[in-house]
Length: 290
Image (cartoon, rainbow, N blue to C red):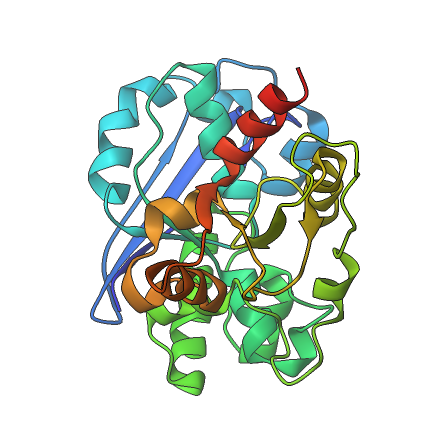
């Protein structure tokens, strides 16, 4: 039950314009440490953003820039599960690191909005914003303050763990699964494709698993254009399994998807089948079409 909740506010619509960071460290399911700072975004402040969070150029005057606190970000986040509510904060940190040519934290990200959607039925398809979920849980906080928002996300995860019996590591797997596990997986069937008979990889039978950077439909179109038959499930006919890059880096043992484990079992039995990451698949596609 160890993780670090993080939230940021930005000066304008550019995600890299971070003007406040808040982090809360949880150890054994309890708040152990917290930290918050204003950040000089070295950028303009949009009146719309100021109206949302109340942070002005005067408020950040003399505050450190992001490169000045990069060390603290790494100390808190490297090797940790980093929790944020929706992908906004993750993208903001990533974009700010790109802007300043900094190495992004080496952490495993977990989205508390996705956790909420799989824990409480009333949040499954609507009302899963930070404020809405906290209202349902009876948790009061000051919205659009980075530290307050970070701790609100932390509270959501702890409540979800308590109600479902899943710990943080199990939630990393659960959020990649369908919201309602009892409902039929219709989305999987929609990616089925017949391969282009003129394609350079015609005859291959390809399956996707894990979280891809591109949508499954686009990935399926790319594979079919190459000639691959795209199937939603691993079978004795599968020849290629494409795994999302973050899953290749993160998963081990039985944390691998069921498709991944079945593919490995088939390979060990002698089936000619390859497991490749999404980036390698895209490079394969690029070279095959030259």
